[in-house]
Structure formats: C-alpha cells, structure tokens
Image 1: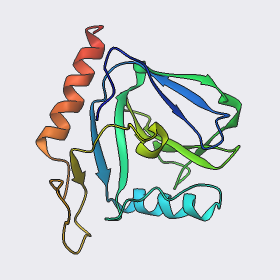
Image 2: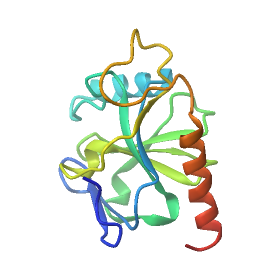
Image 3: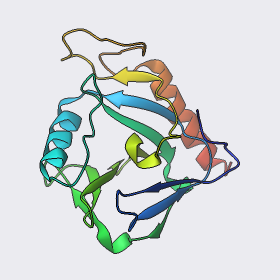
Image 4: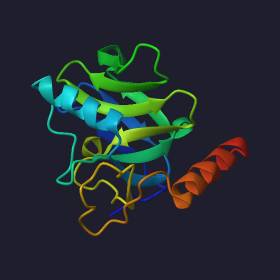
Length: 167
C-alpha cells in the first residue's frame, strides 16, 4: 500500500537516531539486480548491524523519491557515504549509529533511491525488477527487465519535469 501523497512519509535507521521526512508520492519502486547494488548489499550485510538489503530474489528493493522532497530531520552527523569506487558518482549512505543503509544517491540525478526497508511495514510496493541480466531466471510476480525499461526512464523524466515546473 502506497503512502498517502498528501501525508509525509518518514524513514529512519534501525535505532531511530537518523530520521528523514519525504513529502509527496514516490516516483516508483524497483528492485535492482546490477553488480554494484549486489556488491554494496553484501558489504553492508557484512557490517553486522544492518539487516539484509536483498530480497528473496537477490535484488535490492528501493523506492525512488525526488531529491527536493527529502529532508533530514535528525541525525545528519551519523550519515556516512559509501562508494564502491572513490571516483563513483553513486554514493550509498549509511547511518553509522546502527549501520543501517539509508539510500542511494546518483549525484547527477534528481532522485534518491531509498532502501525500501527504511520505510517500515507500510512501504510502497515494487513495480519492477531492473538489471536482471545475471539472474538465472526472473521469478515472482514482478515484471523483470535486463536493463532500464522505457517506463522506468519515463517516470524519472516526468519527475524531473515536475521539479523544474515547481510541482
């Protein structure tokens, strides 16, 4: 069940020391199966304090929100960037207080990919699996795509346009 778009959604780390508010509806929900998301999830799981990021199919479930709709309410000093490569434009942000992965930020993009687990039991549902090329066989009810399907790209473009128009 998706949160009410007129109501703020909160996301927090496991211990509650870090909290964000998200205003507005998500762009979409997707589980990513790319090599980078898989590698980062394995590294986060090795930290010991965080729960598994991967779902039963091996993907990393994320809910995408516009950056202008996300505000850190508390715990900013607990946030640490994690990059698979020091030169990478993708940073994955972890709450150091309890080692909870919080979100992925492609710095040139206009969205945050919030790890679905951070949104609690009422987190929006996923619509698709992306980057599934290394899966032996896509399973489950979600549509699976080896790359980025047109629907994914169009939703990101529509969100960018809405931001530019101040909506």
